[in-house]
Image (cartoon, rainbow, N blue to C red; front, side):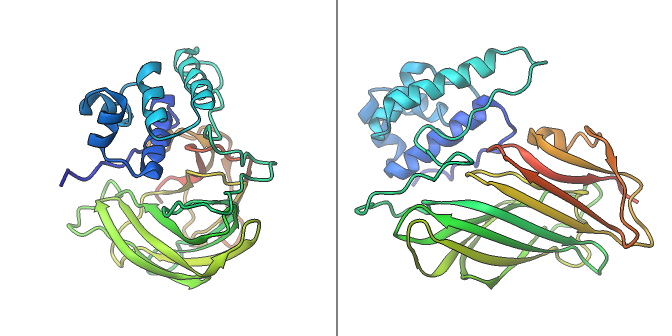
Length: 310
């Protein structure tokens, strides 16, 4: 049995974004690296490197992987070209748009790609997020967030979806344990909790009943940071699938609001940790709250709020 594959942390770079979706294509095809190497004619290391997100694969290797996974070579070739051009562009230029993935027709404003009636995929897939609303409370004994998501099914056999969170450590947190409590308040039940990396948590949400294609479903999650565990001073939504809208309200202690709050709107994840306001700073309301609303979200980029410690 091979070693667990390290998750790719998306930072807005074309290399990691391309590798993320190429890896997702392999998972959909349910092929091991050994099977992929055999089908492509390349070595196991070569095909593995194409999906690590460290170096950008050659066109020949990338399309060989796509063909082995029975992907759309023509659309993947175009996607490879866009990623290559984005890699070569002037760093001062605006980031080149790289989503949706080459097989996903559910771009914002579109109707969404519907799976065929005989879809045999068993991995969590076949939906997009129409709206994500999060209310984060920082005025209590420990941070607590209520997240409401409205999803739209694009597959008539949708029965479960992944629930994933990244909870980075606060720079002053020296506790041995690092955790996150998650419970489903509405719209499904959670199972298979995993904590494969220190800051990464995932579970699976089983829906109450199979969701027909085109139907909306709402679920609500309650997230809690354990008592005495400090929270990193930001809350950011990084969509990995189509996500049409995101609203965030952060409730600070009205008697001790942070000196600075700023908006993060479509930034590479690395920018979050720079701790520098990239846009105009926001003021808190008299009750200590700050609201932010985002639309036309891009896959792999961060949207939310960042603040300085009191």
